[in-house]
Image 1 (tube, rainbow, N blue to C red):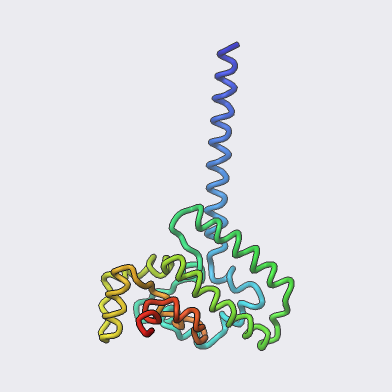
Image 2: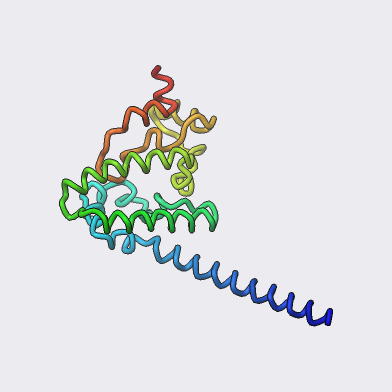
Amino acid sequence: MLRNRWLSFLAVLVGGGVLGAGALIVSLEVNKATSTDEFCTSCHSMKFVGNDPLFKKSAHRSNSAGVNPTCADCHIPKTNWFVETYTHVTSGARDVYAEYTHDFSDPKAWEAHRVALAHEVRDKMRTQDSVTCRSCHDGKTVQPTSERGQAAHALLRDGHMTCIDCHFNLVHAPVPPSLEFIRGSALGAAAK
């Protein structure tokens, strides 16, 4: 009788492990499939982004190094499986909701939404300490040539600012930073 309990417990444990491993593998594959530019630009609003000449000519999309980060490389933190999966699920659900509740086929409607998204993404990147930037760039080894860049990177190394505080119009069509964004950066604090 006691042996049957242990065998049942062991069977449940092994079964749970197999199911858990299977769920992990499936989620990793879903994360991979939903991290491609083709997937990201499959929504009609993102077609504007994919076809934007400024986007296509940006240093992150067209450079001599041949490096071509995907949308997900910049927008999905990959610090660990849970964070990546959580971000995919929550961002994806929000994006699907926005696609079905708004008509972004009008470029003016999309532009208004794009500006709001830019501010939202900047704030999120700041709270995440520009983790997606740091997955490719090591701020401690970047050596800017200008005095302002050197001062900013000294603040970056000391943890007083993050990449997005200065580098916020690199890939997409420019959106001026909000006053709140400027005030929240170390540069804005230094200007007070």
